[in-house]
Length: 419
Image 1: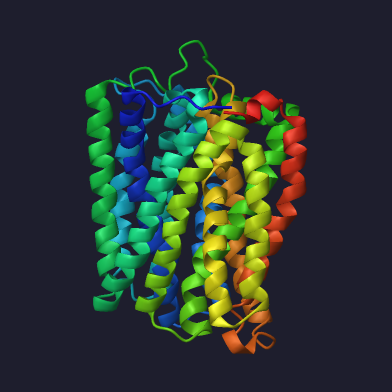
Image 2 (image 1 turned 90 degrees about the horizontal axis):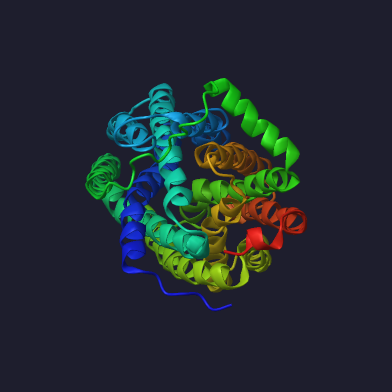
């Protein structure tokens, strides 16, 4: 099926929508990538590191659904979504700056909690703007576009962050706070100036309370099997990504014996494949359906992850990196594109929160399971101090999700999984 070209106004709104993704992705990547190094220097075990970084998922287990539902109902002159971003960004940015100077694990844990709280309060209403503003025939490309911005933020955080971290430990955290604040500010100014948010996130005809709306979403999920299947499949995908993000730098530095700067360059190079995969997967999803593209990518990604799990030869691992990067790009790009066509009207914010609830489960378990597995297998994978085990955790999670995706594709109307 041929895809139509994007109109000029669609290109502009997608570019504008991408700005907060850049800031949010950069800031959370700095936290998940370099905070483990800081925590390791403070004497933390890999299990404690996993617990601290897993705080993102713990926050996502209760906060996003409520915030998403609230953003569906909030009435302001600038709509129901943007106020959450404007309120939540300053404390998140402040926590980032202070994290650079934290000198105890207790303070780190408190600041991480503040950052993740602000992150989710801002992110859920923002993410709901995609189904609000994007038409069904460009869903795949909209998520490909967002993944490019996310990949850019991730790559910048890893490459520039690694260089800054080598110069002065607080530098990447301060830079992330500045970029997060700037991107949200420019985005807010742009959408207010365009007038795109008037009436968005408001349900004029529904007088139900916030609690009643949350119950309504849960009833919707109980009635629709495809939403339940998505929840658990997406949790497994996020488990793999979260585990990998948390320990990949430590795998390269402590497992393979390289420096932080080298690790940042390696991971940054793989991020280029993430960008390419994001662009290609979005177009393929609009042509062939997000479900079909996702299933193919899961096989590629899952089998690719087995290479560094089973092999310690660095040349062979390097050859597998582009495959892992491309498969990971699809995994980071298309899950929300799977969910968007399944969202009923007036539930965009609520089901965006449901999406993040699913993410939260995976993000909580990923660092915890991987950290505990690394410790448990440190006596087996002695060549990498146990860090090779993280690849096995990720591969198992990805491959286990394939039957769930197949069941989802059978349960949902075919048209719903085609953009």
